[in-house]
Amino acid sequence: MRRVAKWRRSVGRDAWDPRIQASFAVAVGFVATFTVAVVLSSANIRMPAALAVMAGLTALSSWIFEWSAALVTAGLAWLMLNGFIADEHGELRWHGHRDVVAAIVLLGSVVAVGALRGLQIRRRRRLELITLNTELSELAGPVHRTLGGRHA
Image (cartoon, rainbow, N blue to C red; front, side):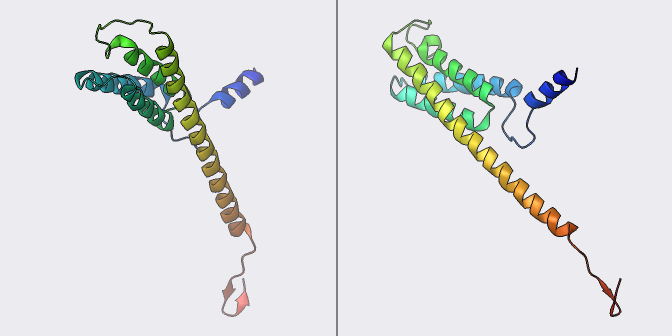
């Protein structure tokens, strides 16, 4: 039973992590990818410009969302680019090399930006803990007050 409690704490949400939780972020990611795909389709923007826009969206999502939601958003972006909305035939089809490159670019943008965001969060947490420890040690130090010339 103690192992389960320890595991549950280890996989729990980090209080220092400001990213949006996956349960809400996946819905936001779907709406964002759908909206961008509709705009790209109506503006008649095709690959590789459409891939660059979706890669920017997935990079932004990996900065704002948790890892799992950012990866799901990249998968949704790939589906939207693969023909779910943006294809002229309106159906999902395998396009061979183009689809592999798109998947690698989208997932690569999520991993790269998500790793940078993780490093930034850990660094900020470490700096805040150092600051907190310094402030606490200053507060816990010896306190000398004088009352009327005498030490209290």
